[in-house]
Image (cartoon, rainbow, N blue to C red; front, side):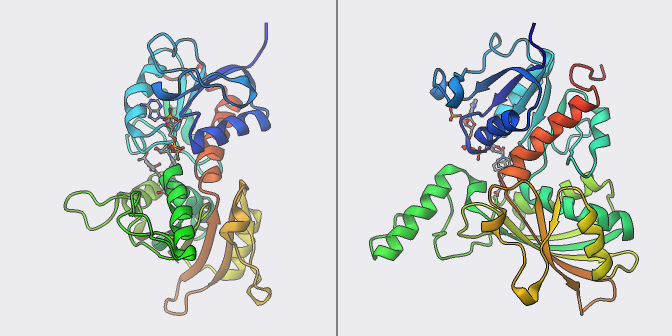
Length: 342
Ligand code: NAP
Ligand code: 3JN
């Protein structure tokens, strides 16, 4: 009999799902079968490697050890508990379960111990939060984070494939002097523009849901509800790679030199910080890589105990698929697949 887990990838035809399929194979996660799921529209479609997409039904979800979801919040809301009921452990990429008290919200390098308390569903954080906390964890452990002021510069792939196509179509039209197609993914044209509106405004809230995710998820992952967070999430005409300017106020003093040393030793972090040589993290360099890149590490001259950082990562990889697969690896190492708390 072949060994390894039977793994469902829900949302396998999407941007994140296709990276997950690739990473599961390339990272050698022990599987005996990988089954791709997507909407009814894609059922029967053959993917690379000959895998055939299945629809979600009570019958097709039987017999899995692990299910990794990236098919949006409503699909996760409906089907993640059903997979758990059918015996699988679920790693969910959507926001649907992230803030539930019973659901660990986990970043592989930051709080893997939270996996031990899982009750079937484990949540993968939002991409903007993910890359930020990987870089902040060693600084928080050393000096305690008091307050963060964050501005994001988010790639359009975070909105989905249609937004990528829209950026390219608008850019072509602008350069050719043609009529620019009406915006669909955003309220305004994204080509040659910057929109202070990443995510959506809920009724009565002057922050977007993306900004709220950054605030709430950061506190949950770092396990410190006292951390104050101010966030402005901006969409920019970049295809892949979210960039963030982060002002970090610490509870005890932390020099840029010590921060650089801590970050160089931190798992999943690459420091690129030689401004005199124009070396700092760039979205185009981070695209296709798994690490979080940190640079422009410097003292905030306006504050006695604050640093400024520039943090960049591939939003579809560490921001989504890579962390999900790393969580599967951590679950496997800890013997937590098929052994959840009743
Ligand atoms: P995408 O390219 O649009 O892919 C969506 C996937 O979900 C497709 O496989 C689609 O299947 C499937 N799907 C849609 N409706 C479904 C349904 N009713 N039942 C089953 N499958 C369904 O989107 P994406 O960019 O990969 O993002 C997918 C989700 O991942 C997002 O909605 C979000 O929740 C999450 N995400 C998280 C992060 C993060 O910050 N961690 C980043 C990006 C995305 P079809 O091809 O058949 O339509
Ligand atoms: O906008 C971005 O750059 C990241 C978007 C993430 C996203 C997009 C649609 C739905 C999410 C998420 O993971 O928070 C969701 C969601 O599941 O709510």
